[in-house]
Image (cartoon, rainbow, N blue to C red; front, side, top):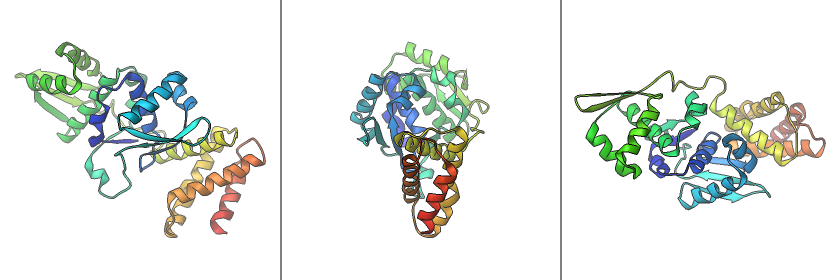
Length: 275
C-alpha cells in the first residue's frame, strides 16, 4: 500500500481509468510490488470501470513503463509495479506515499480527476518533507505545476479548489501555505496492510479453484500466513514459499468440495510444513 516518491512522476497525466486501475492494484501489492492474480471483475467492481477499460488500462500502464503483467489463467494476470520494491532494508528511507489512510478509500477522493489525485499525492509528499507544511511563492507554484501537468493556470486553480477539502491552503505575503489535514489523512483502523494483502491472496486462490467462502473463513485462512510465517522464516524459507504451500492446500480443498474450509486447509498446510 505504498508508492515510492520516485514513482510519482510516472503518474502525471494518466487518464482517470488508468489512475483508478493503478491505485486499485497498489492497495493490494505485496512488499516487492507484485500483485497476484488480478481479475477484471475485481478491478471493475472496485472502480466502476467496464471490462474494456480494464484491458485498455492494463496495456497502457504497461506501455508507459509503470507496470509489467503476465497472463496466468484465462482471465487473470500477475502484475508488477515497477520501481516500487520495498523488500530491501533501505527502501523505506527513500520516501513514499502511504495508501493505508482512510482518505484513499473514501468517495471524496475517488471522485477526484486523475491529475487532482496526482497533485494530492505530490502535495502530501511535499508537506511531509517539510514537516507538515509546504510554503511556496504563488508565482513559483503555478510555474512548477503548470509545466509539470501541462495545464493552464485556470485549470490548476480548479485543482487547488478541489484539494481544499484535503489540505489547509492559504495565501500570505504572496506565498501559498499548504498543510495536510491530519483528520483527513488518518491511518486505516479496521485492518492492517498485511491482513489485506493476505486476504486478497486467499480470495484469488478461491476464485481460481472455484471455491465459495464466507468472510470469516477467508480471514481465518489468510491468518495462516501470519501464523506460520515466523516458523518458516526461522527455517530460512520465504513468505512466497509459504504462499505456494497455502495455494496448494486451497487447491486440494477445491478438489474435494466447493466451499473454503479453513480447518481442512490448515490440516493440509501443516502437513506440508512439518512433513
